[in-house]
Structure formats: C-alpha cells, structure tokens
Length: 415
Ligand SMILES: [Zn+2]
Image 1 (spheres, rainbow, N blue to C red):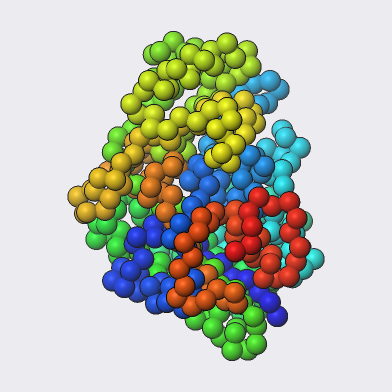
Image 2: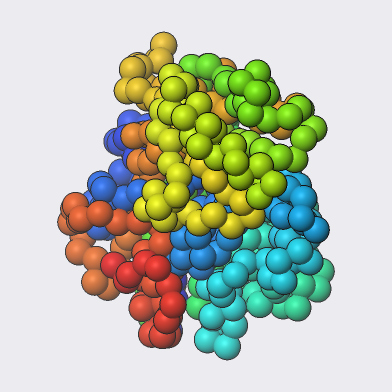
C-alpha cells in the first residue's frame, strides 16, 4: 500500500539540525532529500501554515489569514484569536465556510483517509480538517468523521506530552489503522522556544527530546516498509524562530498618529502574528488608506510593508478588509547563545505574553522563514540537496502525487 507519513517538529529551524543537537534527524537527512531553500507561508505562524499545508493553497485562497485575524461580521471588523477551539466553526457561520478550499482530509476521505495527531493550539489542529472528513486528535477535543467526538488525547503541551502522543500515533495510526495519510504535529521545540532563549540549555534539552520523538516514527515507518508498504516519509517544520528584540504596540502607534480612533475602535484593526501584523481597514475609513500607508512606511519598526498588489506576492488577499501586512524589522545579529536572527514583535491582544529575549516568528525574517524539510521515499534520492525554491504549499500536491490521487486546484506543485 502507498502511504504518506508526515512529522512536523513545530518551530524547528533548519540550522539547528546537526549531529550534536538533533542526531536522529541528522542521520535521517543522509537518507532523505534536503530542501535548503524551503520557505513557509506568510504569516510564518502555525495556524496559517497548518491551513496552508492542509490545502496546498496560500492564505489568499484558504482564507485563514493570520494566527489572529479580523472577520467582517455584519459590517463590523471583529478581532479573533484563530487558535481558539471554536474559531473555524465560528468563521464558517460568518463566511459560509471554515476554509474556502478543500483539505487533504477531504480529498482523501474516500482514498484511504487521514489521521492527524496534533499538540499545538486547538485552532491550528482543527485547521487540518475543520469539516470532519478524517480524524483529528487534540487535547482540546478529538474528532472523527462527521466531527463526532473521538477518543480524547490527554497530553500536555511539552516534551513528555509529545512523547505520549508520538507513542500513541505509532501504535494507532501506523500500527492498527494505517490511513493513507498520517500526520504527527509535535508541539516542541516551538513551545520551549517561546519560553526560553534560543540555544539555551533548556531549549537544547527539549530539542533532543523532539529529535527522539521523530526517531520513534522513523523506526515505525521502517517497520511498515519491511512489511511491504510504499511509504513517503516527510519530516519538517512549519516555521523557524527569531529572538524577540523588542515589542511594538502597533495599535497604540496608530492611535497616537491619529489614524485609529481608539483602543476598542473597529475602523482600523491590527492583528499580531508574532513578528508580523495584519492591518485591516474598514471601508468607512477608506479615506485613511494613503496616510496609513505613508505612516507605516515612515516607521523604523515596520521592516517590510506590503499592500495592494504586493499582498498577492506573499500569498495574501484583501479579504475582510486586509489593507497592509507588516513584517517587523529583523536582522541577523546573534543572541547571548550565538544564535543569529533577531526581530521586533507586534504586541499581541488579550494580554498574551510578549516573549522578549525568547523565540518568536510570524514574519519574513531569514530564520523564521528557514524551516526544515526532509523527504525520504520514492523519487527523493538519499542525501540529495534540492536547492530550488520550495514552499509549504508544495507538500500537499507531493503527498497526493505519492498516493496516486489527482489534486486539482492547489497553488503548490508536486516535488
Ligand atoms: Zn510558535
């Protein structure tokens, strides 16, 4: 049987894959194809990347625009945390769909099915299959086909929880049920990287645990191959991390500049995805578009400002009044542990932590846009280096190609 197994080590930068810090992944890389020009979605944030991975389409088409984003509800811009368990179901009630294009789970529903085990935010987990075509296991609630409740996944968001989830994934998805597509999305090293400095002993200890979890799956896939399965094994990450060098309150800056009416106003809404922000403009405030653009262009914290036609080039579209995307200023300087890459971050809403001195991502910075991608299986030569530009939208068509199922309408191309 043809199968695809995907392991995502959330937040892993590809420059952290080496013989010392991730020995199992380093060994695996020797038998896989490597993709040193692999880039991820914008914002480079897990909920967005999960929907992009699941659909093979950019946010412009699947419409999950940011880790936090605005929806236009009865003519009002309403801010939302896309990580909340009910976000995509709410989005369906507003837009008429959760995601505007089909997921891998939907496309594979009658071709062997999909099982997703996920230990990141509920919103990111459910972005794999918001309409209930396959099986999604998450600590906030598991769902089987038809979105009926499935066996709970009671694990913590840490290395031990990832370990328990990995063991169950291997026994259940790879051992017993054997779907066409099995996805294991680990919460580490992303979770620890948000809480300690990159390269610190605490970070490296958890990274070794994540590496061991990946090894459990590599061994299980080898056993499946010995029993005759033709398995494509994809091991990667959704984004890298940069060290947060400072935090910018973008909405406060817009209010101080006279561009936004007040803290609770819905004329202009800035939604943080870590080191980037999406700025939504209500049509009643359309006359402020040019001055808003001029203001952003004049701000040193606004590293890259994207608007109008530029949105399409980064895979976004003006849905819900999205007017500007900003990737905050970043540089390649090193932190106290010698890890390069620093970026400003956009202050999040809802009193979330601002992560100064720790890791963050979301923008177009060099290191957050340098996730890992290793593919082992037919068509991918052991030890080869594929230097062409590759994007996370290319994974879904690659998966479908291996499974021999047509996949029209995706933005990416099979690798
Ligand atoms: Zn993260």
